[in-house]
Amino acid sequence: MRFKILGPLEILGDDGPAPVSSPRVRALAAVLLLEGRRRVKTEALIDMLWDTPPPSAPANLRTYVTALRRVLRRSGPGEGSPLTTLRGSAPGQSSSYLLSVPPEDVDVTDFQRLAALGAAEMRQGRTGRAVTLLGAALRHWRGAAGEDVSGSRSLTSRLEALNEQRMGVREQFIAARIACGESGAVVRELRDVVAAHPLRERGWQYLVTALYLTGDVSSALDAYRQAEATFRGELGIDISPELQRLHLAILRRDEPLSSVDPTRRADSAFPPQTGAVLDRVRGSLPRTTPGPIGELS
Image (cartoon, rainbow, N blue to C red; front, side, top):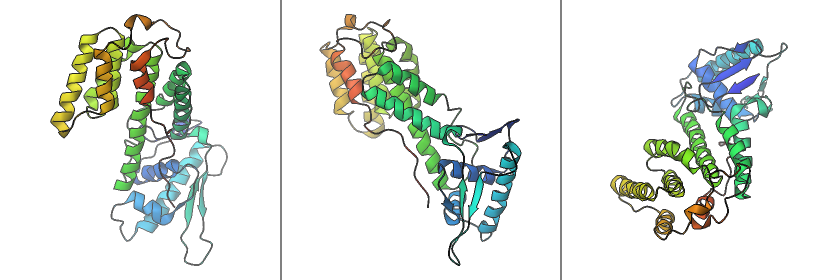
């Protein structure tokens, strides 16, 4: 079986997608998949499914567990189900639930694994390999995380955290492509990024960088001014010193445009003599790598 949550929830069996019609059952499956083979207590599941749990919540949860087991049995090989109930070891202690599926069969787990590997390659300067890994990570996405899942605000927050991870990986992917000499190829995507997320400064930084490295200095400076106006107009603050330093680097022509060869192989390291502009790109990468989105107990 394959489990997908990076978009609409999907459970794929040997005969194709298994329908999960109940919104609460979809939410239950989403929570268990996010936990990555960790046991989840009844109380934690109830908190993820309802903002204000009804008195019947424990009984309702058991009904949803039964329904999810039915879907899993129909979709998977054999008669068993990977969803296990773990009874409390002491009287009055609540049960826990565990969805035991191989990590490679869950899209969010494989996304995070590939993203971490890609970020590590980027920090080592192996940008071609980073492009391959980060691109593979992003191909797992089919829409917003759990876009057809309905649960509590806590569950919504965890799904939004995944969307934020996706955006960070997308930015790293673009940075790696710039470093491989693909500046011209990413300009349109970067314009879409800053239009959709105008207050994410890294998108503006990479757009300015890409435009400059294609030789379009005028558009690079215009993009910088747009970023400056956006942050002052929307937030009433100046843009970061990092982006200001990039602006100054462009004004000083720190990066000789003729030294950037856009035909360089994608598996090469940074283009030669890239100087201050690409140093800004590489130095801006997050030092941490994507990991699991929280835990429940």
